[in-house]
Image 1: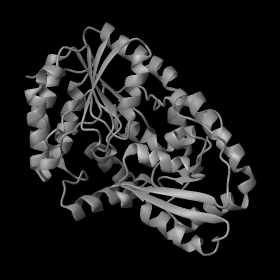
Image 2 (image 1 turned 90 degrees about the horizontal axis):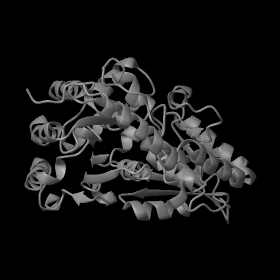
Image 3 (image 1 turned 120 degrees about the vertical axis):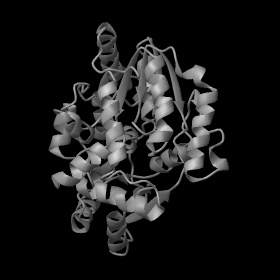
Image 4 (image 1 turned 180 degrees about the horizontal axis):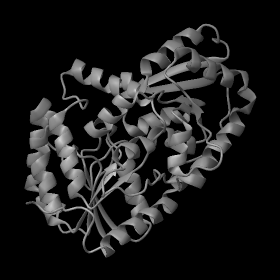
Length: 376
């Protein structure tokens, strides 16, 4: 099959491309490189992106895509990473999405990015994810950007797209649960990781245990303020045993290099599941702390022990988990080996590629499609 991947967050579609290519498919990835992360793409539509700000930046990206629209048509499948890749303003996204829906045989939406449907669902369900949603909303208001929560225009667009695409494939429980009622919903497929390309070395503690937390562009959503409070509380107490490091705004390669120099990675406190950053760290053999609840594991079909140490949005609980690792420092190398094996067993890109291959072939065999992807 000839497949178009549209969008990129944290390297997910870069990995899915490799997974699909391992099954013999021809894949073309179009993205903006995920901003400062500077991730690879076959076509980068952000050629003009850094010459402008705000909505004009998005408009210039759309114009660049429109000038190169020949690259967006004629595929067996177009796979969108998100309903609003270009902007959270519907009128900016619609022309490009409409064009790709019309000029490709089948369309698939990946459940991997934050949406209004998802945000409203979790906010009103009063769960662990509500902290993430509130943090997202606060960050948007502070920056003057378009919030997802209670955004009726975006909700209408997402609902329309869910009913137009032929399939919706989530990657995590958080992106599956709010969408099960749609006829385009398909089973969750785990995130693929190219384990064979990620070097593994024993997780050996040198002078001190190095704890590292990467600060995202939405720190409140991921629970960063709570993690930083925990770091501050423990720095002096364990000054001889541990070092606490933070990183912000690094290109992907530099971030991964910092992960390589660390022993323990702290990710997110808010949610049921973990995603790309955690998996890349596990593949390197790191001990990882993050969101890891039973419902998230059940969604992914995880039967064995998940090595990620669960964090909750509570400073005392975070401190307790950090201290547990410090007091069991002699187990860190062993835990690192378990981390690597977990990724090899459950997230190997070569195995996950076969799952996507199966879903896409089934989709192509269904001449009627699941949704109606034609423009009325």
